[in-house]
Length: 135
Image (cartoon, rainbow, N blue to C red; front, side, top):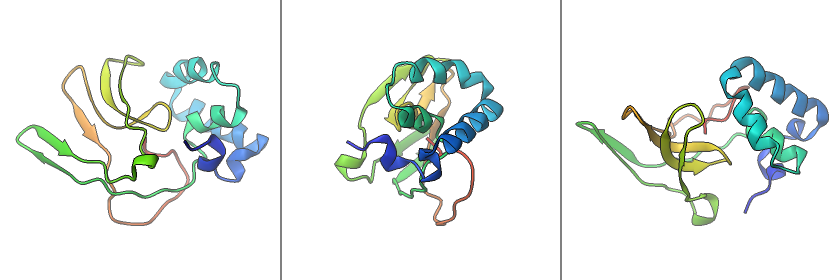
């Protein structure tokens, strides 16, 4: 199983990088701050706390095959088994959601209580920049 330092950029492993990641999270996702704090309070590793912000994660690219047709979403997970958490979760952080967990508290796909289904996929361009990791 991967450790937080395996996911984080070099900057994310520094106290300054951790503080910057937290500030970005606080600024851009204030509605999730109480959830982040509740999850992070259960962790011993400061790097794991930083990882949960998903703001200083190394770029990664993957491609999962999927198709949507007439209100149905079908997909598979083109991950090596040791690179996919493979856990289906049900949460109520902001509203009821069920999905395939990734990166501690993110999802690769899911559906909320209103029936909205979303799914991550690789768009085909190996381009990255500053911001939050998708999950």
